[in-house]
Image 1 (cartoon, rainbow, N blue to C red):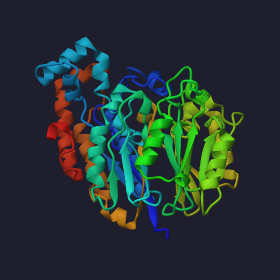
Image 2: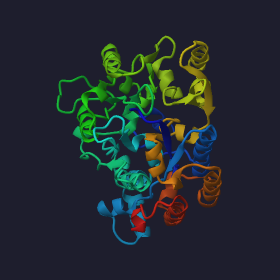
Image 3: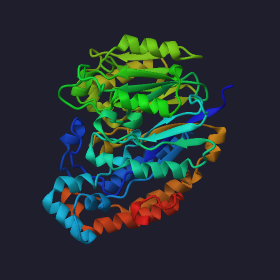
Image 4: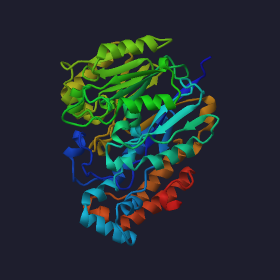
Length: 446
Protein backbone atom coordinates (compact mmCIF):
# COMPACT_ATOMS: atom_id res chain seq x y z
CA UNK A 1 0.00 0.00 0.00
CA UNK A 2 1.40 3.39 -1.02
CA UNK A 3 2.38 5.75 1.79
CA UNK A 4 2.03 9.51 1.81
CA UNK A 5 5.35 11.01 0.74
CA UNK A 6 6.85 14.33 -0.28
CA UNK A 7 9.75 15.27 -2.49
CA UNK A 8 12.20 17.26 -0.40
CA UNK A 9 14.78 19.42 -2.15
CA UNK A 10 18.21 19.71 -0.54
CA UNK A 11 20.05 22.67 -2.05
CA UNK A 12 23.78 23.16 -1.87
CA UNK A 13 24.76 26.24 0.12
CA UNK A 14 27.27 28.12 -2.03
CA UNK A 15 30.72 28.09 -0.41
CA UNK A 16 32.98 31.03 0.49
CA UNK A 17 35.45 30.20 -2.32
CA UNK A 18 32.90 30.46 -5.16
CA UNK A 19 35.03 31.50 -8.15
CA UNK A 20 35.24 31.27 -11.94
CA UNK A 21 38.20 29.07 -12.80
CA UNK A 22 36.69 27.47 -15.92
CA UNK A 23 37.49 23.98 -14.67
CA UNK A 24 34.77 22.06 -16.49
CA UNK A 25 35.59 21.15 -20.11
CA UNK A 26 32.28 20.54 -21.86
CA UNK A 27 30.43 23.08 -19.72
CA UNK A 28 30.10 26.06 -22.06
CA UNK A 29 29.06 28.61 -19.42
CA UNK A 30 31.94 27.62 -17.17
CA UNK A 31 34.45 28.27 -19.94
CA UNK A 32 32.80 31.50 -21.08
CA UNK A 33 33.26 33.22 -17.72
CA UNK A 34 36.73 31.90 -16.88
CA UNK A 35 38.84 34.20 -14.68
CA UNK A 36 36.07 36.74 -14.15
CA UNK A 37 35.82 38.04 -10.60
CA UNK A 38 33.08 36.29 -8.62
CA UNK A 39 30.93 37.48 -5.74
CA UNK A 40 30.69 34.63 -3.20
CA UNK A 41 28.42 36.61 -0.87
CA UNK A 42 25.94 37.41 -3.62
CA UNK A 43 26.02 33.79 -4.83
CA UNK A 44 25.25 32.40 -1.36
CA UNK A 45 22.48 34.93 -0.76
CA UNK A 46 20.93 34.15 -4.17
CA UNK A 47 20.92 30.46 -3.28
CA UNK A 48 19.39 31.09 0.14
CA UNK A 49 16.73 33.34 -1.39
CA UNK A 50 15.78 30.55 -3.80
CA UNK A 51 15.48 28.08 -0.91
CA UNK A 52 13.41 30.48 1.19
CA UNK A 53 11.07 31.24 -1.67
CA UNK A 54 10.31 27.55 -2.17
CA UNK A 55 10.04 26.89 1.57
CA UNK A 56 7.53 29.75 1.80
CA UNK A 57 5.48 28.00 -0.88
CA UNK A 58 5.20 24.96 1.37
CA UNK A 59 7.87 22.73 -0.17
CA UNK A 60 10.15 20.77 2.16
CA UNK A 61 13.48 22.54 1.61
CA UNK A 62 16.75 21.36 3.09
CA UNK A 63 20.38 22.44 2.92
CA UNK A 64 23.59 20.58 2.16
CA UNK A 65 26.67 22.39 3.51
CA UNK A 66 29.60 23.59 1.36
CA UNK A 67 32.92 21.78 1.47
CA UNK A 68 36.20 22.93 2.99
CA UNK A 69 38.18 24.75 0.29
CA UNK A 70 41.03 25.19 -0.46
CA UNK A 71 41.48 21.51 0.48
CA UNK A 72 44.91 21.27 2.06
CA UNK A 73 44.89 17.44 2.47
CA UNK A 74 44.58 17.05 -1.31
CA UNK A 75 47.49 19.45 -1.89
CA UNK A 76 49.63 17.53 0.62
CA UNK A 77 48.74 14.27 -1.14
CA UNK A 78 50.11 15.85 -4.33
CA UNK A 79 53.47 16.57 -2.71
CA UNK A 80 53.16 20.14 -1.48
CA UNK A 81 54.80 20.39 1.94
CA UNK A 82 55.36 22.69 4.90
CA UNK A 83 52.95 24.95 6.73
CA UNK A 84 49.54 25.48 5.25
CA UNK A 85 50.58 28.95 4.09
CA UNK A 86 53.63 27.40 2.45
CA UNK A 87 51.51 24.68 0.80
CA UNK A 88 49.25 27.34 -0.73
CA UNK A 89 52.23 29.39 -1.87
CA UNK A 90 53.91 26.39 -3.51
CA UNK A 91 50.73 25.33 -5.27
CA UNK A 92 50.07 28.84 -6.57
CA UNK A 93 53.59 29.02 -7.96
CA UNK A 94 53.89 25.47 -9.33
CA UNK A 95 50.36 24.96 -10.64
CA UNK A 96 47.65 27.62 -10.34
CA UNK A 97 45.29 25.17 -12.04
CA UNK A 98 45.68 22.62 -9.24
CA UNK A 99 45.14 25.32 -6.63
CA UNK A 100 42.00 26.45 -8.45
CA UNK A 101 40.75 22.85 -8.57
CA UNK A 102 41.14 22.26 -4.82
CA UNK A 103 39.50 25.64 -4.16
CA UNK A 104 36.38 25.07 -6.25
CA UNK A 105 32.97 25.62 -4.65
CA UNK A 106 31.43 23.08 -7.05
CA UNK A 107 29.79 21.10 -4.23
CA UNK A 108 27.07 23.79 -4.43
CA UNK A 109 25.60 21.78 -7.33
CA UNK A 110 24.04 19.04 -5.26
CA UNK A 111 22.31 17.50 -8.27
CA UNK A 112 25.76 15.90 -8.57
CA UNK A 113 26.04 15.02 -4.89
CA UNK A 114 24.46 11.58 -5.06
CA UNK A 115 21.86 9.28 -6.56
CA UNK A 116 18.85 8.69 -4.31
CA UNK A 117 16.27 5.91 -4.61
CA UNK A 118 13.07 6.22 -2.54
CA UNK A 119 11.90 3.38 -0.32
CA UNK A 120 8.89 2.73 -2.57
CA UNK A 121 11.28 1.47 -5.27
CA UNK A 122 13.88 -0.49 -3.28
CA UNK A 123 13.73 -4.15 -2.24
CA UNK A 124 14.48 -3.45 1.44
CA UNK A 125 12.08 -0.45 1.52
CA UNK A 126 14.75 1.96 2.73
CA UNK A 127 15.90 5.19 1.05
CA UNK A 128 19.25 4.48 -0.61
CA UNK A 129 22.05 7.03 -1.17
CA UNK A 130 25.22 6.67 -3.25
CA UNK A 131 27.54 9.72 -3.42
CA UNK A 132 28.72 10.40 -6.96
CA UNK A 133 32.42 9.75 -7.62
CA UNK A 134 32.51 12.57 -10.22
CA UNK A 135 35.66 10.98 -11.60
CA UNK A 136 35.52 12.91 -14.88
CA UNK A 137 36.76 16.11 -13.21
CA UNK A 138 39.58 16.29 -10.65
CA UNK A 139 38.07 19.24 -8.79
CA UNK A 140 34.84 17.30 -8.25
CA UNK A 141 36.37 13.87 -7.66
CA UNK A 142 37.50 14.99 -4.19
CA UNK A 143 33.94 15.72 -3.01
CA UNK A 144 32.37 12.33 -2.34
CA UNK A 145 33.87 11.63 1.12
CA UNK A 146 32.50 14.80 2.72
CA UNK A 147 29.27 14.47 0.76
CA UNK A 148 28.87 11.00 2.24
CA UNK A 149 29.51 12.31 5.75
CA UNK A 150 26.92 15.05 5.29
CA UNK A 151 24.28 12.64 4.00
CA UNK A 152 24.93 10.20 6.84
CA UNK A 153 24.62 13.02 9.40
CA UNK A 154 21.30 14.18 7.92
CA UNK A 155 19.85 10.72 7.20
CA UNK A 156 21.31 8.78 10.12
CA UNK A 157 18.64 6.25 11.09
CA UNK A 158 19.69 2.95 9.49
CA UNK A 159 16.19 1.53 9.82
CA UNK A 160 15.06 4.08 7.22
CA UNK A 161 18.22 5.00 5.28
CA UNK A 162 20.98 3.01 3.55
CA UNK A 163 24.29 4.61 2.54
CA UNK A 164 26.74 3.24 -0.02
CA UNK A 165 30.27 4.42 -0.76
CA UNK A 166 30.98 6.06 -4.10
CA UNK A 167 31.71 3.73 -7.02
CA UNK A 168 35.37 3.07 -7.95
CA UNK A 169 36.84 6.37 -9.10
CA UNK A 170 37.82 5.34 -12.62
CA UNK A 171 36.46 6.33 -16.02
CA UNK A 172 34.68 2.99 -16.53
CA UNK A 173 32.40 3.79 -13.59
CA UNK A 174 32.09 7.55 -14.03
CA UNK A 175 29.07 8.64 -12.01
CA UNK A 176 27.61 12.16 -11.95
CA UNK A 177 24.76 11.54 -9.52
CA UNK A 178 21.19 12.76 -9.86
CA UNK A 179 22.09 15.10 -12.74
CA UNK A 180 21.75 11.98 -14.91
CA UNK A 181 18.87 10.41 -12.98
CA UNK A 182 15.22 11.28 -12.62
CA UNK A 183 12.21 9.47 -11.23
CA UNK A 184 8.76 9.22 -12.76
CA UNK A 185 5.74 8.06 -10.77
CA UNK A 186 2.00 8.36 -10.27
CA UNK A 187 2.62 9.72 -6.75
CA UNK A 188 5.77 10.22 -4.70
CA UNK A 189 4.84 7.44 -2.27
CA UNK A 190 3.98 4.95 -5.01
CA UNK A 191 6.45 2.68 -6.84
CA UNK A 192 8.12 4.60 -9.66
CA UNK A 193 10.42 4.30 -12.63
CA UNK A 194 13.98 5.55 -12.18
CA UNK A 195 15.45 6.83 -15.43
CA UNK A 196 19.24 6.50 -15.57
CA UNK A 197 20.81 8.42 -18.46
CA UNK A 198 24.36 7.59 -19.54
CA UNK A 199 26.72 9.07 -22.11
CA UNK A 200 28.73 6.03 -23.10
CA UNK A 201 29.21 2.30 -22.65
CA UNK A 202 32.66 2.06 -21.08
CA UNK A 203 33.35 -1.57 -21.90
CA UNK A 204 32.23 -1.31 -25.53
CA UNK A 205 34.51 0.84 -27.66
CA UNK A 206 32.24 0.30 -30.68
CA UNK A 207 29.21 1.87 -29.02
CA UNK A 208 28.04 5.34 -29.98
CA UNK A 209 29.80 8.13 -28.05
CA UNK A 210 30.36 11.91 -28.33
CA UNK A 211 33.33 13.15 -30.34
CA UNK A 212 34.00 16.67 -29.06
CA UNK A 213 33.24 16.60 -25.33
CA UNK A 214 33.59 13.72 -22.87
CA UNK A 215 30.67 11.61 -21.71
CA UNK A 216 30.78 11.74 -17.93
CA UNK A 217 28.27 9.03 -17.02
CA UNK A 218 28.67 5.39 -18.04
CA UNK A 219 26.07 2.68 -18.44
CA UNK A 220 28.15 0.50 -16.13
CA UNK A 221 27.96 3.08 -13.33
CA UNK A 222 24.20 3.48 -13.69
CA UNK A 223 23.67 -0.28 -13.64
CA UNK A 224 25.88 -0.64 -10.56
CA UNK A 225 23.86 1.95 -8.63
CA UNK A 226 20.61 0.27 -9.60
CA UNK A 227 21.97 -3.00 -8.21
CA UNK A 228 23.26 -1.37 -5.02
CA UNK A 229 19.91 0.30 -4.44
CA UNK A 230 18.01 -2.93 -4.92
CA UNK A 231 16.01 -1.73 -7.90
CA UNK A 232 14.24 -4.54 -9.70
CA UNK A 233 13.82 -4.41 -13.47
CA UNK A 234 10.43 -2.75 -13.38
CA UNK A 235 11.87 0.20 -11.44
CA UNK A 236 14.79 1.11 -13.75
CA UNK A 237 15.18 2.30 -17.33
CA UNK A 238 18.62 2.93 -18.84
CA UNK A 239 18.76 5.46 -21.68
CA UNK A 240 21.70 6.75 -23.66
CA UNK A 241 22.09 10.50 -23.94
CA UNK A 242 22.33 11.71 -27.51
CA UNK A 243 26.06 12.19 -28.33
CA UNK A 244 25.04 15.17 -30.47
CA UNK A 245 23.65 16.89 -27.39
CA UNK A 246 26.80 16.24 -25.35
CA UNK A 247 28.90 17.75 -28.13
CA UNK A 248 26.60 20.80 -28.08
CA UNK A 249 27.48 21.43 -24.42
CA UNK A 250 24.87 19.26 -22.69
CA UNK A 251 27.32 17.79 -20.19
CA UNK A 252 24.54 16.30 -17.99
CA UNK A 253 21.08 15.04 -18.85
CA UNK A 254 19.54 17.65 -16.55
CA UNK A 255 20.64 20.32 -19.03
CA UNK A 256 18.33 18.77 -21.67
CA UNK A 257 15.53 17.03 -19.70
CA UNK A 258 13.69 17.19 -16.37
CA UNK A 259 10.98 14.98 -14.92
CA UNK A 260 8.45 15.16 -12.08
CA UNK A 261 5.56 12.88 -11.24
CA UNK A 262 4.34 11.37 -14.49
CA UNK A 263 5.73 14.24 -16.62
CA UNK A 264 8.94 14.17 -18.64
CA UNK A 265 9.93 17.54 -20.15
CA UNK A 266 12.71 17.10 -22.69
CA UNK A 267 14.32 18.35 -25.89
CA UNK A 268 14.10 16.21 -28.99
CA UNK A 269 17.90 15.82 -28.97
CA UNK A 270 17.98 14.47 -25.39
CA UNK A 271 18.00 10.72 -26.03
CA UNK A 272 19.73 8.57 -28.63
CA UNK A 273 16.74 6.23 -29.07
CA UNK A 274 13.89 8.49 -28.06
CA UNK A 275 10.97 6.24 -29.06
CA UNK A 276 12.42 3.22 -27.27
CA UNK A 277 13.15 5.24 -24.12
CA UNK A 278 9.55 6.49 -23.95
CA UNK A 279 8.20 2.99 -24.63
CA UNK A 280 10.33 1.52 -21.82
CA UNK A 281 9.09 4.15 -19.36
CA UNK A 282 5.45 3.64 -20.35
CA UNK A 283 5.80 -0.12 -19.95
CA UNK A 284 7.04 0.23 -16.36
CA UNK A 285 5.08 3.26 -15.13
CA UNK A 286 2.06 2.14 -13.09
CA UNK A 287 -0.94 4.10 -11.92
CA UNK A 288 -0.55 6.93 -14.44
CA UNK A 289 0.08 7.61 -18.11
CA UNK A 290 3.37 9.22 -19.07
CA UNK A 291 3.01 12.89 -20.01
CA UNK A 292 5.85 13.49 -22.47
CA UNK A 293 6.44 17.17 -23.27
CA UNK A 294 8.76 17.18 -26.27
CA UNK A 295 10.45 20.42 -27.30
CA UNK A 296 11.52 20.44 -30.94
CA UNK A 297 14.55 22.10 -32.52
CA UNK A 298 12.16 24.32 -34.45
CA UNK A 299 10.70 25.64 -31.20
CA UNK A 300 13.98 25.92 -29.27
CA UNK A 301 17.34 25.25 -30.97
CA UNK A 302 19.61 23.13 -28.78
CA UNK A 303 22.06 26.05 -28.56
CA UNK A 304 19.31 28.20 -27.02
CA UNK A 305 18.39 25.42 -24.60
CA UNK A 306 22.01 25.29 -23.42
CA UNK A 307 22.41 29.08 -23.26
CA UNK A 308 19.22 29.56 -21.24
CA UNK A 309 19.33 26.35 -19.16
CA UNK A 310 15.62 25.89 -19.95
CA UNK A 311 15.68 22.24 -18.88
CA UNK A 312 17.87 22.83 -15.82
CA UNK A 313 14.74 24.12 -14.15
CA UNK A 314 12.75 22.68 -11.26
CA UNK A 315 9.44 21.06 -12.07
CA UNK A 316 7.29 21.24 -8.93
CA UNK A 317 3.78 20.18 -7.98
CA UNK A 318 1.26 22.88 -7.07
CA UNK A 319 -2.48 22.62 -6.32
CA UNK A 320 -3.15 23.96 -9.83
CA UNK A 321 -0.72 21.89 -11.89
CA UNK A 322 3.06 21.99 -12.19
CA UNK A 323 5.29 25.00 -11.68
CA UNK A 324 8.45 25.34 -13.79
CA UNK A 325 11.06 27.30 -11.81
CA UNK A 326 13.44 28.71 -14.42
CA UNK A 327 16.64 30.81 -14.33
CA UNK A 328 16.36 34.44 -15.40
CA UNK A 329 18.30 33.66 -18.58
CA UNK A 330 15.20 31.89 -19.93
CA UNK A 331 13.54 35.27 -20.36
CA UNK A 332 16.61 36.69 -22.10
CA UNK A 333 16.63 34.14 -24.95
CA UNK A 334 13.79 34.95 -27.35
CA UNK A 335 12.95 31.44 -28.53
CA UNK A 336 12.88 30.12 -24.97
CA UNK A 337 10.78 32.97 -23.58
CA UNK A 338 8.29 32.54 -26.41
CA UNK A 339 8.17 28.78 -25.84
CA UNK A 340 7.48 29.19 -22.11
CA UNK A 341 4.52 31.47 -22.81
CA UNK A 342 3.10 28.92 -25.25
CA UNK A 343 3.74 26.07 -22.79
CA UNK A 344 1.61 27.65 -20.07
CA UNK A 345 -1.19 28.33 -22.58
CA UNK A 346 -1.11 24.80 -23.99
CA UNK A 347 -3.37 23.25 -21.35
CA UNK A 348 -0.75 20.66 -20.40
CA UNK A 349 0.61 19.72 -16.97
CA UNK A 350 2.84 22.82 -16.69
CA UNK A 351 0.51 25.63 -15.64
CA UNK A 352 2.92 28.31 -14.42
CA UNK A 353 6.49 29.56 -14.87
CA UNK A 354 8.46 31.54 -12.31
CA UNK A 355 11.89 33.12 -12.69
CA UNK A 356 14.65 32.63 -10.09
CA UNK A 357 17.81 34.73 -10.02
CA UNK A 358 20.83 32.41 -9.71
CA UNK A 359 23.17 34.37 -11.97
CA UNK A 360 26.32 33.66 -9.93
CA UNK A 361 25.70 29.93 -10.30
CA UNK A 362 24.66 30.22 -13.96
CA UNK A 363 27.97 31.85 -14.87
CA UNK A 364 29.66 28.62 -13.80
CA UNK A 365 27.13 26.51 -15.67
CA UNK A 366 24.55 25.61 -13.01
CA UNK A 367 20.88 26.51 -13.00
CA UNK A 368 18.14 25.98 -10.38
CA UNK A 369 18.05 22.20 -10.88
CA UNK A 370 21.82 21.88 -10.46
CA UNK A 371 21.52 23.40 -7.01
CA UNK A 372 19.21 20.75 -5.55
CA UNK A 373 19.20 17.05 -4.68
CA UNK A 374 15.71 15.53 -4.65
CA UNK A 375 14.92 13.12 -1.82
CA UNK A 376 11.50 11.47 -1.66
CA UNK A 377 10.53 10.79 1.96
CA UNK A 378 7.43 9.27 3.49
CA UNK A 379 6.10 10.72 6.75
CA UNK A 380 8.17 8.43 8.99
CA UNK A 381 11.35 9.03 6.97
CA UNK A 382 10.83 12.78 7.10
CA UNK A 383 10.49 12.60 10.89
CA UNK A 384 13.73 10.60 11.03
CA UNK A 385 15.57 13.25 8.97
CA UNK A 386 17.81 15.68 10.90
CA UNK A 387 15.69 18.80 11.31
CA UNK A 388 18.61 21.20 11.71
CA UNK A 389 19.04 21.45 7.93
CA UNK A 390 15.38 22.09 7.07
CA UNK A 391 14.78 25.72 6.04
CA UNK A 392 12.61 27.74 8.40
CA UNK A 393 12.27 31.49 8.82
CA UNK A 394 14.65 31.31 11.76
CA UNK A 395 17.29 29.23 9.94
CA UNK A 396 17.10 31.47 6.90
CA UNK A 397 17.75 34.56 9.03
CA UNK A 398 20.65 32.87 10.86
CA UNK A 399 22.26 31.75 7.60
CA UNK A 400 21.81 35.14 5.94
CA UNK A 401 23.54 36.76 8.91
CA UNK A 402 26.25 34.07 8.77
CA UNK A 403 26.92 34.72 5.06
CA UNK A 404 27.03 38.48 5.59
CA UNK A 405 29.61 37.99 8.35
CA UNK A 406 31.92 35.50 6.66
CA UNK A 407 31.80 35.82 2.85
CA UNK A 408 33.79 38.13 0.60
CA UNK A 409 32.13 40.42 -1.91
CA UNK A 410 34.71 39.63 -4.57
CA UNK A 411 37.09 36.77 -5.25
CA UNK A 412 39.69 36.43 -8.00
CA UNK A 413 41.97 33.53 -8.91
CA UNK A 414 44.90 35.27 -7.21
CA UNK A 415 42.99 35.35 -3.91
CA UNK A 416 42.95 31.57 -3.68
CA UNK A 417 46.55 31.51 -2.40
CA UNK A 418 45.74 33.91 0.44
CA UNK A 419 46.22 32.04 3.77
CA UNK A 420 43.65 34.37 5.30
CA UNK A 421 41.00 32.97 2.93
CA UNK A 422 41.61 29.45 4.28
CA UNK A 423 41.33 30.77 7.83
CA UNK A 424 38.11 32.61 6.98
CA UNK A 425 36.60 29.50 5.39
CA UNK A 426 37.39 27.24 8.34
CA UNK A 427 36.03 29.71 10.85
CA UNK A 428 32.84 30.03 8.81
CA UNK A 429 32.36 26.27 8.36
CA UNK A 430 33.05 25.52 12.00
CA UNK A 431 30.29 27.94 12.92
CA UNK A 432 28.01 26.52 10.20
CA UNK A 433 28.19 22.94 11.46
CA UNK A 434 27.11 24.30 14.85
CA UNK A 435 24.17 26.16 13.30
CA UNK A 436 23.07 23.10 11.34
CA UNK A 437 23.91 20.60 14.09
CA UNK A 438 25.88 18.32 11.79
CA UNK A 439 28.85 17.50 14.00
CA UNK A 440 32.43 17.17 12.71
CA UNK A 441 32.07 16.50 8.99
CA UNK A 442 35.14 18.41 7.76
CA UNK A 443 38.72 17.16 7.72
CA UNK A 444 39.97 20.14 9.75
CA UNK A 445 37.46 19.26 12.50
CA UNK A 446 38.46 15.60 12.78
